[in-house]
Length: 373
Image (tube, one colour):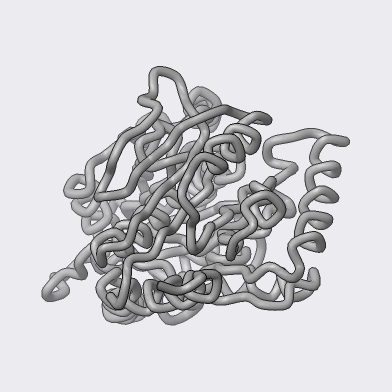
């Protein structure tokens, strides 16, 4: 490192927030890497019940102030009392922080996915349409700000909305690919897994309905749902209504070792989101020698290579996903080839391969805004 640079991430959640998810996991990896290089790294996030106002994680200074509708003002007030930052990372989750207009320093916009239809997963008309229009206007407003994302689909959507500069850096995972690929027999029951926050936009009910479709086709299968979230009661009700109580297990939160074991044990990982920035758990499953069956939506069609590391269904329906699963298992030799390809590809996405290039780019962006020594 030639000299220490100062970085600030603005994100509505931080990694210690109980509601944190994949966005916070990957953000933590990037910022931890910058901190390990000796840079001065900060993360401003919304406060949450019983949180500490300030903490340090992996050398990152985490500041928590404000909440929904007030955190931007709180960030502005806090920012004015700080020494100059060389780069501010304005993370978008539907509504950004509008940092280019109040920080007066170099900014990049970090976005995981263009929400689009996700608005309708959480809000009814007309609020969902207001959200979509606001998002489109925001992207127009930010058209001259450099963007950073992981997914080519997101990059293409941003360019279509007039964004001039988009840097694409793949996400990584800490999951180490198995040193060798053990045999996994296609024995009954077919073991399916979902790893996800249990939220409306993840459409876990579609995975449950897919299990029902398989049962109707006389395919003996079971589903393990790994994760927690507000949709748990509705999902359990769905399981009961479909008569699948003996076929579905809600495993809740699992630590990394337990999660890896469950992924290695599964035959296929399912992913039924409305849209994703990528699909981290797909690569984690691949590292454990488990291919995936996913919906044909942005993000998932890049983390799963159709007919190579798994299958992408033709439609966003449980019936179509059941078709994809059936095509994977009807020829055991084809399934084993998916496993091998998925396992080999996962090795390319370990953080050790991703972070050096990401840090180089972030440092170069910070130096553009730096006044020099």
